[in-house]
Length: 160
Length: 292
Image (cartoon, each protein chain N blue to C red):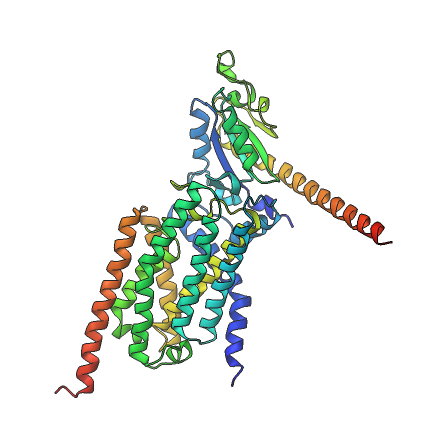
């Protein structure tokens, strides 16, 4: 039952990046790198996504947007922060409007270093994210089962 | 003999998702090759649907689940009627009703993208509906029966009488398969100007149901293509394969058009169909009166 690992759909969001990393993210879709080999699809819809690929250091204006997008992705989900700015704010760290890293706003699972991050690194980051995704799925179904068992136990308790 | 129709229906209900999923896998593979890519594994569509069933359910308006389920059921029903050899008109009406449920499902949610997708789906319905009925009428004029069971065993080469109708049907097939240039309400491609159109608000198992319904639908439509070539099963199967490959090719070489162009194309296809039928009616009448 490991379909999730074979079909990770990605949502790509530019949280005030300089566009360098975004071009590298899109390069992953080109015939040269062809991430669809792994079943990866770059979807534009958070409700269909499994992985949030996010670039840039987040500014005051798109902070809410990032939170909103993250909330809309159904569990299990992972966040991959692509590039130096996404990790720490990078060269924009000292700017008055920069929050300074994705993990200041939403939980991040994988950090991909680089300025700009290379397509190979991004693909590696996504593949690393897949195992985390699988862990989360196992945890999620486990939690659901515990909840279900507890409910059954409760019902059994009520009936006796 | 009374139960043989049941075999076709049951076989369709069981096998169509498998066949439809495999067709989708081959489709993605060929599309990738046409773009100079390697492409996903053949079984990728099954992984996708399996994955969707594993995801959390984040439904805001629960009514949408009911509508999508009704969509799936009526698509499966129209396909089952088709492979049971049923009445083509009833099949087309069940097929239309299925899409009305999908549109209602998209309207049930308060999302502008979903609503635009639903509006475009209605426009698509308007675009292809005349042609699909003309196709049924054309097959009736050739075989004197609306029943698929009769049309499928005819010895008359329907395609030679109905080339215009077939051309028109192939045009609206592009709309129905959700392929470029007519993939306006939702598309297989990653990005669309309206997020994901009609399926924007469907996620998890609901989206999986839409996907399975689409597999059923594709098998049914390819069965419809076969009817034009039914006098020779070998040619029929080759024609179905060639038609689908042509659809993949068109998908890859064209850009998405605006809804006005999609509507005009659908109706232009219907005009070709009507001209074909008018000529056919004239010829058939001429033959009946013995050239007098």
